[in-house]
Length: 487
Image (cartoon, rainbow, N blue to C red; front, side, top):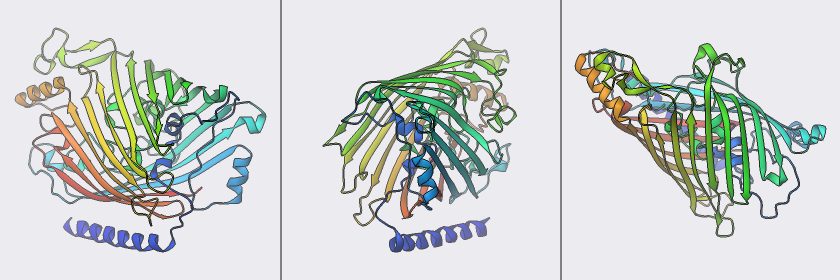
């Protein structure tokens, strides 16, 4: 294993050296390719884009995302001119532990090891402007498919809360997995947007295109606390859904929707390919609501996004501590108390604080908190903060430095249940090998704009109290994230 780690470290060092050398020679400065524009971020980009200053009431389809591509070609330009936006990319994520795991002979500990992992995703996006194709004013359809591969390193040292590589899991281990496919009608110059179809709820709600400037799964995609329940459809999972978004003013929006809850949404048996559309497994609904303020200060150079939201789940869920009669279900071994519904809330903010020369450059701060129903959740709340500094070096206007942390507080009922089960010598839930209380994950990275459509991001991840357990050693990982936009 030590030979493997030395080889991985040398390979990472060589790749980093060659990338920096390569980027300094051939990087063009005409276009920006940044992690905010990867496939999958398009819905959150539309949420975070206020109406233009010279807005009108004329109905039209909002512009599709056009990230800088490795292979710009006349076919793509022709397709876009005729209403078809086709994108293809690959994201690869490597992480290797540089600290040894906790050792022991008890069940669970004997499987821990020091090692490295690689995970990735290739994705295809197709947006169709039916206004151009068929004269349907304001109507567009959106579809994404992915294929995922590899595994994640965090489980090697006992953590099951936050993936070291966000692109692990959820893709069904198939060549093509349908993420979403839905139609959207935009009316009154963007003041009203109505969407329905197979949708990822958390691509529209509690979302930001800035989150995936990082690799770890506690932050990338969305802060992990928002999908604490298996009933929340987050990328790359989807359910049938309906969503409506209104913009009463240029910088304010309100949106809500209804998303039927499908049992086993993250399970292979039900959603392996994403093309299983039957409604037989619908067991309830999720109803989110969110409002946001999107100011832009200093003549438009300092944009911000301030959003508050909540959602209710109509499906009954088990209490994380009490049995039917108010005792500890771990001690009595009786059925857990059931709650007829549960809920989740969030407050999320980001604000650019400084602006440099390039249009999209500057220092941006992100912070927020997700608070879940403490009686039914695993994560009672998750608080996060981050700094994203893009274009700090004038000669590297598209390079990005990032620093993030997430703090996870385990629900008190889960902690007490763990303690009761541990005292009895019984197996703990959530893959725990000790009492779960709280955890923190930090990441520092530097995203290098190598050339058109190529980003390479060396990074360091650090896990404080993996799996929220005091009996597990902290873990440090070195790795890198690469993103290639082919079309």
